[in-house]
Length: 340
Image (cartoon, rainbow, N blue to C red; front, side, top):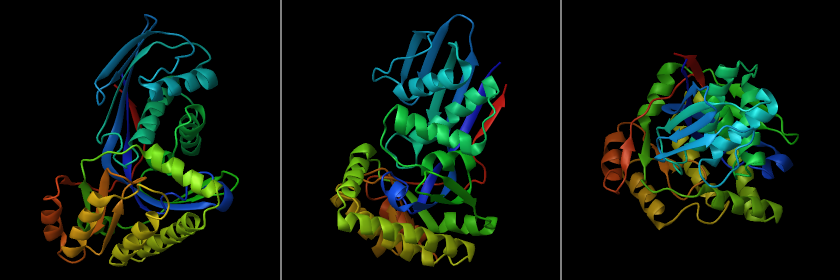
């Protein structure tokens, strides 16, 4: 028996950062994101020899371990070990033997939620294997707990839910840690037009998101006025983005993205840098009306809204900046698992 799973990566269109504790705990958060046809994959093959083989194709790391109830994190594939430890603790209650092969369509530090999406894909494979009765909210919350609590990885809450549910979603994060995912009913012709007009650009520079997120957290804890006001404004823009999509007023999106980028840079240092600013300004001069970095900032992917027929000129300019434009489409579905 072979078990496979895949979960989609996402574009954070608006509200990014308002899902990060302690801001979301104090004030609540709002996010609008949409999944794309880039995925995290997991293949799980049960074994009977008491071995655990972890194979990360992306990182070119393969490790073989003796099966135990706890895999000690040691700096190598700790994300997978953390997932295994929680599965054994909460569900299996005994050691497991298997081979796990993983890969992701985007590199770490891309800003597309690759780490959390991989967690969802791996959890999905375990759920399929062990027949675990976890619903979508349960699965996303478990992924959040593994990353943010068990492994103490800095980050927000949106990625786990985006990968699990899929599609275009308006997400609300409440002070009591409750999360509500509101799927938006948007016609396919609207999302197709949005994908055409919104150019995704890989800057081919990665960043360590935890550094930026930790500063964002520090700014909230220290009650710094400007970063907190910026987060409130970004949360409001998520509502504006939702309305623009639902009403098919796509040309408002460029202005919303431009405002989001302006406020996002006030949330923490190193969200932007001279190289990113240069890319942004060139895209606007070529005809884009707005854009932003995807994820925490500092590098990875950027996307730009290009009204009318400006897409081709913007792409031409962007491709001269050392990175490359990434073709994509929006997807309607989230995590999928199956047996072979």
